[in-house]
Image 1 (tube, rainbow, N blue to C red):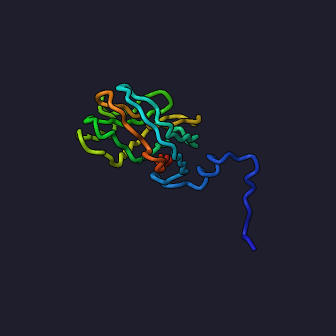
Image 2: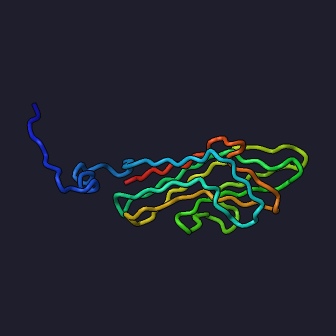
Image 3: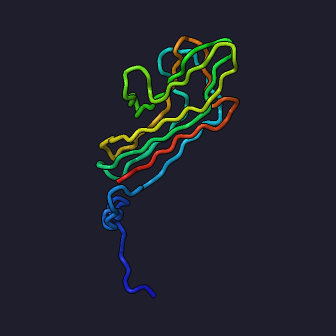
Length: 161
């Protein structure tokens, strides 16, 4: 038999979590997006891979930890670089102006494949739905493949208070 009960009728999820007094650094929620459909591009400008996830932060002061991974390859005839980055809605979050979060280098004459990964700790300062998407570009107009042969790529979003 409980000693007491709390009537949480009419309280929002953020009000309840605030009342619990979670310590700084607590993970409030986790969202995952997946892509199991191969994507290819030869664009030298960033284009969406289709790997995306949306999160609605419960606190405007929360940080969002974004982590992604997926297979990436180039055709045997192309020696090129491939770059991946993360967009928040329509804003590129890359730290440098051209290199993205991960650069993969491919040699001419071999079927080149590897795993691309990246992470970023974002401060969106909002409680509105926020979408994070992995974007990709080719370094030299050669074809780059993402989620090769339908291998599942993932993006994970962790809201941290």
